[in-house]
Amino acid sequence: MLEDLRRMNNTLYPPRGGLSDFFIWPNDFSERVRLNGTLNNIEENIWRILLSH
Image 1 (cartoon, rainbow, N blue to C red):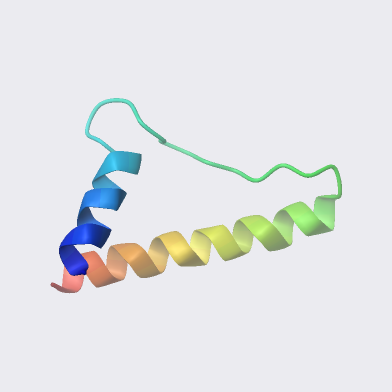
Image 2 (spheres, rainbow, N blue to C red; image 1 turned 45 degrees about the vertical axis):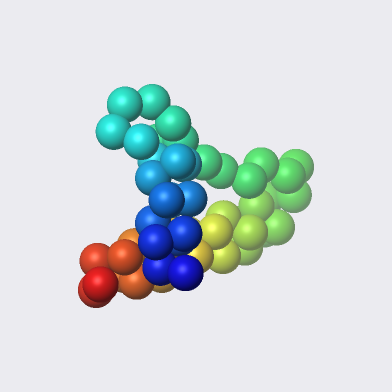
C-alpha cells in the first residue's frame, strides 16, 4: 500500500512537469480558503508518510 501511495504521488509530482501547485478555486473566498487548507493538510500528511518510510 505504501508503494501505491508513492507511485500515485510521483505521478502527480514528477521531477519535470506535473502539478507544481494545485488550488481549488470556488467563487466563495471563505470556502476556497477552507478547501485549500484541507488540500494542503492532505498533501503534508502524504509527504510525512512517504518521508518516514
